[in-house]
Image 1 (tube, rainbow, N blue to C red):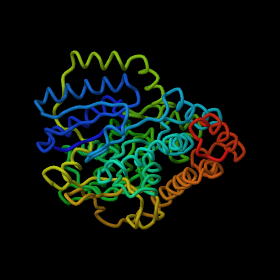
Image 2 (image 1 turned 90 degrees about the vertical axis):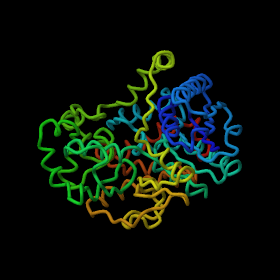
Image 3 (image 1 turned 135 degrees about the vertical axis):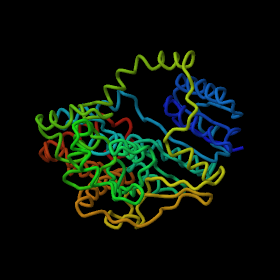
Length: 438
């Protein structure tokens, strides 16, 4: 019997879907599912939700729940991390303070001033979790879903030998979207995708051995396609390769789309995709759900159906490859660069093709980004590593230096304005940054 521990199980829908995916593999029908969250109310809802999934599928898994991860971790084969350090009343300032200085943020969970401060709050929490894993289940495979992915994975891998892999759904999600644009079925595209998290690109895009980029260039001329992802389509036009993450996210990572109101109106307000780029898009979503999540989840517990078909997240397939029937599973993973991408700094966290099998997780090759992509991606990777070193050394000046050269921030602010913004954000987060030298 295998044991899987979900830390941050209060991410209710996401935890439910990940457990459902695990249960679709016969090897894990009788697994122990250990749920951990510091919020007792959300933890109880998570337990009840998982028990509903187990019952609906006729599975034999056992479900436990605790607010103390030290009770859950011993004997774990897999650990999944989906935590949020600080609620909406804390991370709202990651978005609202930059706005005062003219930096318009859509999501703010990956890089730039918002992503860096989310990372600084979260890093010590995840390191404590990994230290507990080292003591209680050192051979466990740890899969991290918490953002900002690249900075957190680099920070953890720099300080631990535990098997830690960062997972995101942008690569497979975008591939499915592109297949639809090209008139193909889900899973029919073959691709090689590499870069860094939320800023990776499809270096190859094929169907039955045929290069599909010419067809994609035709597809984006169709009005319904052109309207769906305005930022990403513009990037594809001029960079020649299609990026993985949504228009809203991508608009934050470069200086081209959010530095003037007219550009925001043109590129960030009218897409038909999941996240066009509206200011504070995710913050508004969370704030709107603060008073409704309990009623919504309670209604699902009482009346909702359980979807038993496996979803598209990587986690269950990875665990099946390692602990289950051994079917090898290819995916894109976030790992510190050890020569995997030749023109991104060693040690920076990169997102590259890997294979999971009975012996673990292995990078599939060595990749070189085209120069125009390397220039864009390497800059972001350098700033992320600067923030990682800031967290390791407790150096607030490195925090400032990382934000100072953020492309969007630098496109709208002076150096003095960026300094003042960072100082304000440091003060607002002081309670979470006791490991820094103020």
